[in-house]
Image (cartoon, rainbow, N blue to C red; front, top):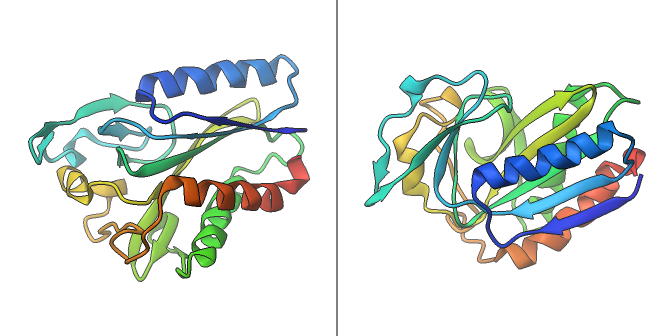
Length: 208
């Protein structure tokens, strides 16, 4: 399986989902490519399959009217917006058939990337994703059909953190979020992307 990197400066969330579904269908038809997609989205709240509308507290934050989108990924409510890098993976897991391992690998990619930037990321029993000093810096969610997965992980580089105040992130009122910028790490996505690619290749090498 060969890795193919696809990069977008920004995509509307529904367009990103449609792209991943096209790639998923190609894999289901026999395509053996491991797709890695980097993108950002305009401000949007997405409601996963375990999410509840009551966790959307308000849609207007900092003068922005934020759209709500019902999505098919696992998980609850989260926020996507400029300054947050989405790392989507569309790939065949039919050999491993282990979604927990796949999510572990997504988290591991971010943990290793953060370490390169001098930040200690970790897992937390409160929920899926990557945490720094009790604050969530990356959220993860996946969907699977016939062992082809899509969706992925969202890393907060320098988003507007106030936008998270409009929701109960991932259903946890005691789980405030953070970003690399808030932690004092001044980087852009162009600095982070090569690190993510390198660690995707290392962590997912069994699929490549």
